[in-house]
Length: 139
Image 1 (tube, rainbow, N blue to C red):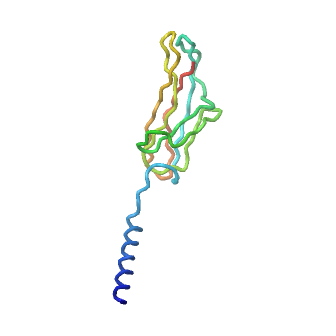
Image 2: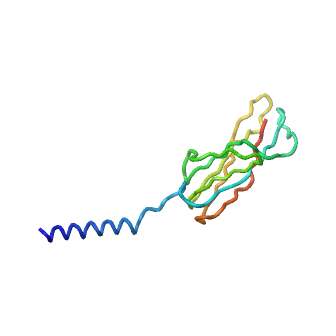
Image 3: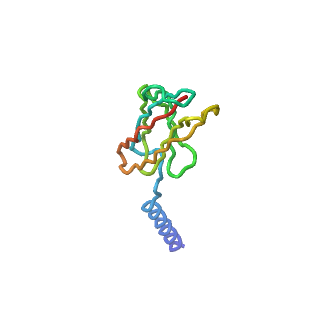
């Protein structure tokens, strides 16, 4: 009887040690110390599709973050007064940052939106990755 209890206890210890030492690799997402940041610019267009002025800070724009190979966004951020955004507390891995921008319309067609997507790799657990500035078209 004692031999059976000892054998079971030993097997249980082996299973626990195996689980604790192999662990699970956590994928992209929150729970880390890394940051993805960047800036959005806005470019105004006339209804005829002609640029109207120079690009300016993209305040109050939605920026979306997709973890890994996901197909829908996992987090959003509304840009600050200067067009900046920052996603914090991220784990290492690959992310997609995207915004919606109007497509220059064909005359008489309403503007349509398309996603501007930047793929970003976070390799440093506590690093900061700066995404290339994205310019959003506005009509």
